[in-house]
Structures are given as structure tokens and as C-alpha cells.
Image 1: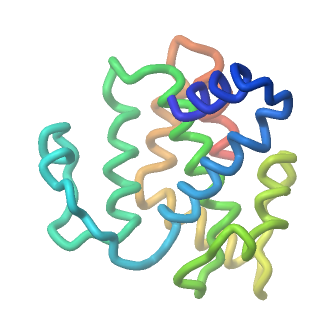
Image 2: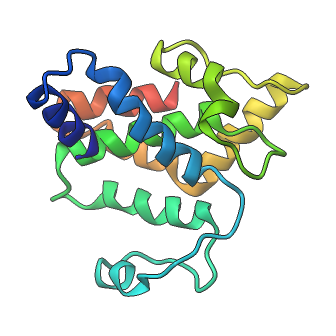
Length: 167
């Protein structure tokens, strides 16, 4: 998975604080997948080859839905499943309804809350309603079903990440 790759690389380079390094890659992917804009899709055959259903003119959320399909494949690696669950959890923290594009500087507080396991909060009012809307959006995309399915995974680390997404 992504996290393992970055963590191993960081350790081999002598970087002690791997959490901040890993955070950057997950943050960038979460920001990208949470955008409510059209996604350039240059390698459509890769999705077709993997059996992932993606519309002809996809939005980033369509790509996120395609990624969620991997949780239903029994041969998906544990690290990949955990990375996927972390990314979707990060999306709920980072996405701010009404903002089409966000960048790392736009969501520093949200990212710190994600890394610290603080509750997700929204900047704009009404905060609670926006958070409920986001949770409903990711539920409709399949994140809840994926997390529930992965709670039965034989590896405890996957189960823990699944529960964390649901909270």
C-alpha cells in the first residue's frame, strides 16, 4: 500500500517522523478525490482491465467510487485496504461543501484534526448539517458498505480502520 511504501522509504532515508511524510501523500489524494469537479481520465483501459466501472466523463467522486470496489475483492492486500479506508476518512475531514477545489494550505486545521483523531468539523455554518451531508455523500458512494464489509476482515488492523471510518 501507499503508506507502507512511504514509511519504508522514509525509514531507509533516516527520517524519524514518518507520520508527517505519509500525511502529505494521503492528504493530496484525499483533496483530489473530494473535489466536486470533472476528472481527466487518460488511462481508461486500466479501469476497464481491473473491472472497475467508471462513467465516460467521470467526476473525481466517480473515481473514488471505483476505488471503493477493491474492498469487495478478497485478494486485496491488507495495506491497500487500510490506505483506502484512511483516505476516505480524510476526505470527510478535508472536504468543505461549496468549495470546488481545495489545496493543502486551505485545510491545514482539518488535516491536523485528522492526524490527531479529533472529531471532524466544518468551517461554514450550519456545521452539523454540513457534516451530516458529507457523511451521507460518502455513504451513497459506498464508503459505509465498504467499511461494514471490512469489519469482518480477518486482520484486526483492517477492522480498526473500518470502524474509524464509520466514527
